[in-house]
Image (tube, rainbow, N blue to C red; front, side, top):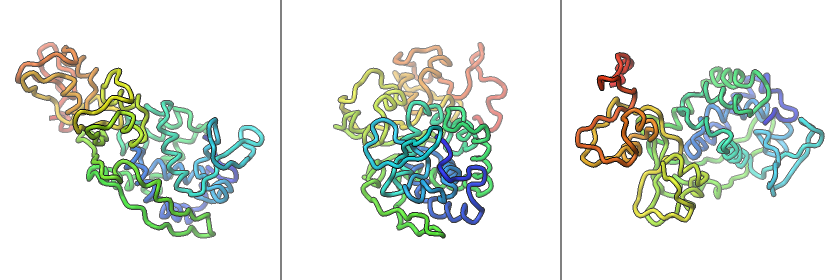
Length: 332
């Protein structure tokens, strides 16, 4: 991804234009965060930076706020600008909100999968990760995003998104106001609003900050992946589902994680029930299964005796106790 034609990434337009852009697009950024688990602050900062606060020619004429090029398989409208090469193809959207949706889907490619290991309020490492994964060629790209976020306190919208996720609800779309100087006003497109939490599917976020959504009895893995706008491989990986395929059907309602589990839990130990396995505990605590295997010395499906303590945050020493620093900061 690169700076858009006629945008000024260094300034992202003036302060007044920046504030107007944020006011117009903050709700859509939060909405995208709830659906796709991308921090609203990052989405807003990228929109500001790459569209010149909505003043670039590409954003005004083509509703393309993130400089997304056509790439193979794009069947929508197109426009052409000189960029890295002469006459490169860029996507055109009837609704600028489709540009926001497309940006979210773009970041959910395998290339950016490491970003979803990060916490939703860790905007600094999200910004650095975008640069590290090759989103932009500018050596100051991450710094520019962080400066925009902190200048306008965009992290407040990350907390708003987290609050919506915890409630298991999707914020309503409201009619958009116009930008000063008549940047193109998006038309309404309520069909795009019909996504996971908007259709009554419950969801939320665990105490250690891992997002999940409900999988329903009778649904196939392919159905769920499509509803959540994830790849089947992501559902398999995030939920330790092994070699199940897209036609595998759920036999009961169950929680499915929509981003990678953490290396640490919210408390120091999980005390096992009789016959409980690490695979089950990994799903309950949203902690990576391989990490639990390594810390406990047990295999994934080995039945555990009642009272067996599985370390969730730190590996125990040879004496079976946690290291001295385990309780620093309320590790508990």
